[in-house]
Length: 69
Image 1 (spheres, one colour):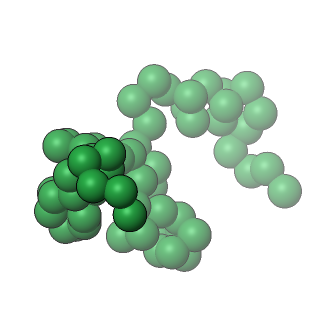
Image 2: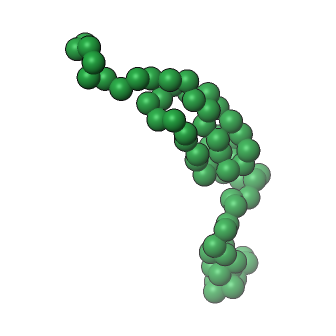
Image 3: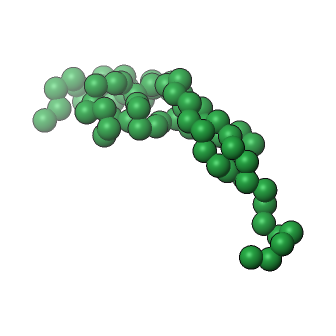
């Protein structure tokens, strides 16, 4: 590898919206994510609810009803 052309890698903390924190190597200083493996429905089996800040889930339920096949 050529010297002096690659960005510096540093150990940072990644913070998820659910409160989970991970340490990874990155060239960035801060990293905030909305969904991680602890809160994503695919990994949790749908046990946790997605944080809906804009009311899209409620709007969908009002429009199409609660019981959708």
